[in-house]
Length: 429
Image (cartoon, rainbow, N blue to C red):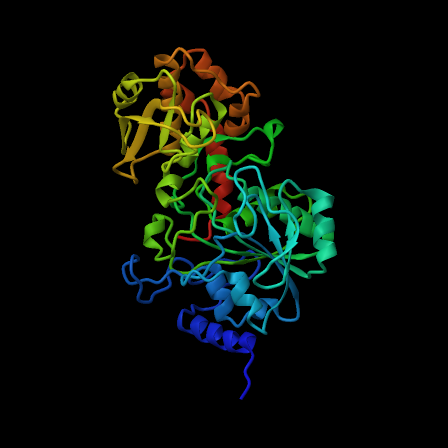
């Protein structure tokens, strides 16, 4: 009997989905009855098995996609727990009419560094056309969706919980473009790797909107991509897109990524581990300075430094007794980016209590102390720090000699307002 590889894989995928199935996730903006409460055997979650949005979509036999020409916005993180890419899985399944892939920054298969993409090409593994969405928005992006002839656009990318991580703005731009093109939009949810606890940090001022922050949300948003999609759709889109969110089951807001039982695939080249994501919402601020943020090392965003910095920085940061983190005097030579090939001094962050650790406060404290102990400290000439923090407030206060507590206190009123708005869209316990 001749059985095609596509049919055989479809049968295998269906059987696998059935063994990991949760009850079907709810559509639209309704809350999933089992979100955060699903139960079944799984390591790392105390007997619960977390199921991603894709797992629940597959377990339901892809009913949401029936009769639809489907395109998907994804990158290397769009994998099953067996680390098969969901594009390969869906392409092999005759229940899904997958006709296009849309690649964000770094590309669909992840071959490009920061600030790059893969361009337009046909995927060698599946033959599917891959369209480049990076730095495209509005009508030009809508035209790509129209040209692809899709009916429904899926989104499945692992986020890291920080406002300036560009994938959430790819989500936003694609939602806007899908509405312009008259396409349905479906978000497949994944965990926030640094938990879904309270939002932290300054809130973007609209006049500072860029691709590292389109709308006024806080620096550490504490939401999943599906929750963000619901918030974007109701609060920020001029006209809402036809939105469907496939929630997870078995996820709790207090859980870090290692509790999920899912494999970690770097969402971008400089996000190698969940430990990187833990500090990123604070230490990425060093992109706005003349110090290295650790790119070109094996510990990006955990190592920070520059020529001329010595032990005094680690001593000054350590003297603040910040919760959950120690600072070690460190020396390193980046292989690319700032100070390429030069041995520089600085600090390494060692998070010893991740529940107590506040990445944003820690990032501010490190900026304050770096400016005090190193005479060579400077902001990037393009004031990139203002784009990262969302206003001039952090930069001008630090330049004026403000301490960490004063800087953090200055954004609390705006943060409280964002937290109140955010609360309407939280879908998990």
